[in-house]
Image (spheres, rainbow, N blue to C red):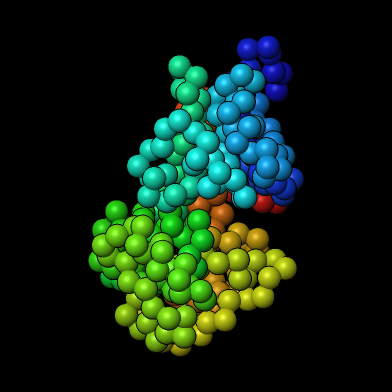
Length: 279
């Protein structure tokens, strides 16, 4: 694709950022829709994150995605926060408004729900309690989205209970915190199991969790997508539970930002999944 001097600019800001698949993802859409634009990696050290974010309008950027470790810093650096970013306490998408001010959004919850609904047709948040493992930034977005979508309760567990309690206090009604040792016994009554920890990712130990008590009808999802089928998902598949991998969350959370920066509502397709995976 030929880029002109009028190209629309966006990118992904993180440290490091070389591992990010977002440039490949957005590059696919730019090519597919014939858009005069570019989406580039922005490697910014933590001590310069706020400075770099504030410079986006001066550099002609329409916005950017924000990844670790800058999501919380971005929330403090922008001029406006949408409701999802306020609840999550983190920003993953920045949009430069027409007046040059910066709006921070969090589309992780949107991406999580869209992925679940696409990967497990007929799934509904109201089907029963959801067990969520982990209490990091992604967990905040996941928990808030499940509550907003009608989950009767979210049962939250983290190795450090204080972090889970802080998250529950921020989200409000509908979130109950349990000790990590209770994670297996709670599965008997769960309609959904979500792993938001890094356990099971390439280079990390597998999640220490037996699924013996999990109801056969429960859906299991993992926000990790390297590997695509984590040990948790493999174990759930083997016993007949429906599983949803984490790649779709990455793809769907990118849709609102792409639409805001480049003016086209993009589609998530099987061709896109294969391209992002490089297969």
